[in-house]
Length: 387
Image (cartoon, rainbow, N blue to C red; front, side):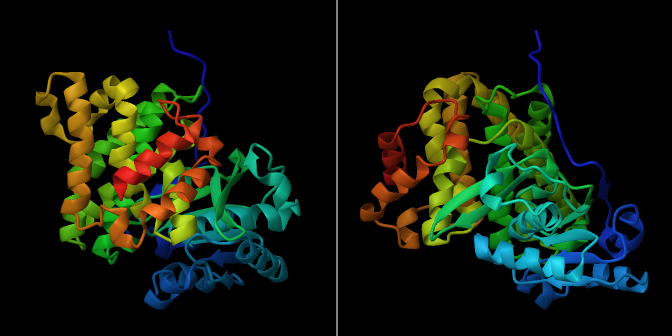
């Protein structure tokens, strides 16, 4: 019997090489006369947003821009961006870039229109709205933020908090593989594994809303990501591999937006908040260790999904052995892609582990979805195993 579930995703999705250069037409239904672009200095320096900006300008629109987004964006930056959007009298918000830019754009669209207090919007379904029309254009294949109702912000010095609401789903997600062609190998690898984590955790999530649509999308995401990540890393201008990675990332985003992620993300967030390790790499560093911890209760689930990512594992008949091999092959993949696999190599020592474990326990929104209950002592041992 299929349990009741709810599935939400972005209202409209456009996937096309060069789609960003036609944004004036693609997003005409929701742009208004004064669109406001949210992006980061790297995007501006590379000129990645130029085709979209040119298209909007040629259409006679008055375009505003906030280009100061940084990784792990702090609350003060979000507030600055909101004020800039209000000053521009924005009629819509265009998020352009990686996950941080898209997350900031979501909150700008919400807060610039509704005027609500961010302190009252934290958590699940607390945002009230309304928001400005929202268009999201990813330039990495990892976060899937263009199809998720989530915005993660750094509060204080280190704590990560999220606003989770269907209001944050955009009116339009534009997937243009050409925007990802110049992505450096290390970023391609880390964001690709980030997308894999989304799919794995969505499939195995203990959430009451774990559903057949999310599981189907997670399997297809893993198939696309596994078949293309090495080519995307080694041959960065391969349009086919880049398109498949972008699509896989989106499918994984759709999956976890409805069947939420769990302990991998809970343990990754303190690495980003305290040590400013990029989110994708943070996930990659703890992923195999969390899977090994979960295997005592989730081996059958991991055995189901393992061949989608690593087809050769279909030859391993024992569910426990296949699940164990799955964790090992994910660790090997990170190394093969050139990613750092040990916390100690990134300046994290045994003396840092207790604080990391304490901070991970604050992520109750995520830990509740983990297949196996995790205590602070468990988190401590997982971090130690990753040193």
